[in-house]
Each structure stands twice: as structure tokens, then as C-alpha cells.
Length: 212
Image (cartoon, rainbow, N blue to C red; front, side, top):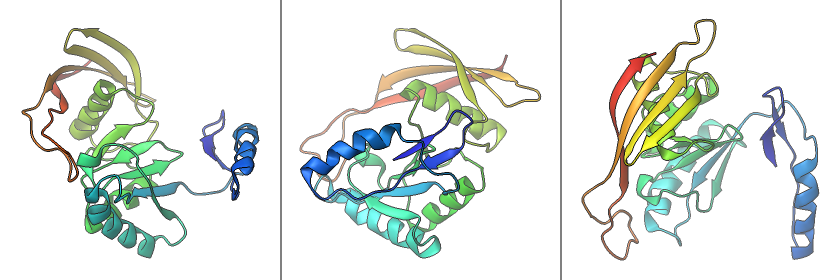
């Protein structure tokens, strides 16, 4: 069980469940305080049964990461976004990265563990909706990397396909940025290795970034 406490510190509780009835222990683990001092966990999707791309691209990335950080990296099942394989999820930070290969995976995770989230390869944060994820990525792309919790979404309005997202930066300046986004469907194509037919992905295009 990986989570943050009220102070923002990492807390983790590890255990093993072997039988179905053991899963009841997971419920109590969710409420346990957990232990401090553990580094984040790096999860790499390598679920080839769900989509071949995840195994073909995920396993080389997982291997390179595990060689660099033994014990920190786990292959895992589906995390969503097969078309972005190889996918990495850093927990409990809740940060998705995609479009990785072995070399870029090592670079991205190295930067993340040093407290620098870059826009390159960033899919988004798990606690934000796609338009908000695009807004934070746009601010990072324009103003440079930042820590996971340095930017906060403080306002969201929507009118049809048009979004206005306010992203507030870290103190002492706490600058606010207004990001305009338009959502639209991409041209249909096969999105994943196992995709049975063409499909049109939803894209969130950034049209403007202004300091508020």
C-alpha cells in the first residue's frame, strides 16, 4: 500500500497475499499508517496478454530500470494507455510517463527521483483529468521542470470542447498561469498492437499559455 500522509511524506506498507481470503487484509492495510523512509516505487507495464506493445516495449524499459535501481522497479499489469507503451507509473507520486525506451526510461526516472518532472514523456498526474494534465505539461514545457507538487490546478472551466485551466506555481512567487485547451478527436488509426480496429483518440491541444 503506497500513499502520502497529511504532510506529503511517502508511507508504504508491504505484505504478501496468497489466498483469496487474505485479500481482506488489504482493506485494513489501507487504513494503516505505513512506514516512512521508503523511496517511490517504479511500475512498468509489461502486460503482453492485454497488448503486445506493452511487453515488446515495456520489458526492455523495465530491464534497464531494474539494472539501474535494483529492488525499486516492478513489472506490472495494465496501467492504461497502451498506445503510449512503454508506460511507467511512479507511485505513490502518481505520475505517468509514456513513449519510453530503455534509454529514455532511465533518464526520465533519474530526473523524477531527483525531484524534476519534465514535460517530455509526461503523460500526466493520476489525480488530474486529461485537460488538466495537458495544462500542467504545457507549463512544464514552457518554464522548465519542477517537483511533483510544485504546480497545483486551482481553477477549471469548460465550454464544450474548450477548457480554461489555471495552474498555480510554487512559492515564494506562486505565479498563476491560464492555459487554454481545445479537445478534439484525432484521425482514426490503429492505436495499439492488439487494437481490433481503427479508433480516434481524444487529443487536448494547448492553444495559449498566459501568466495570470
